Amino acid sequence: MINLQQDAEGFIRMKRHFPGSTIISVTFTDGSSEEFSGQQLNAIYDDALAVFRAENHLDAKGYSRAPKRTVQPANKIEFVAVHPGMAK
Image 1 (cartoon, helix red, strand yellow):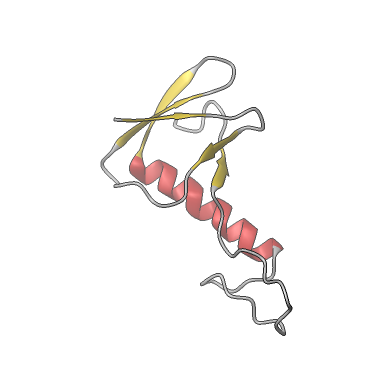
Image 2 (cartoon, helix red, strand yellow; image 1 turned 180 degrees about the vertical axis):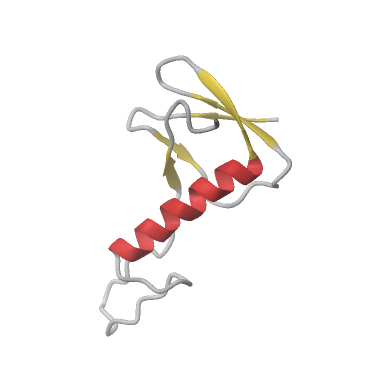
């Protein structure tokens, strides 16, 4: 079992997918906790990544098709928003 802690802004750190059959326990800032399957958290991560890419005008693979700038923003996320009740 993997244990994750929600930060003050309502996010958990998730840089990659977890194995689908793994049970992940998320402890929220209010003290409650829920268990997610790896598949559930992976779906939440994929949704957050799709929103991030759409807001930053990136394609499905995370690449910018705009002309190159001197400083290219990152094309991935590390933090995913979660709240109590999402596991149901």
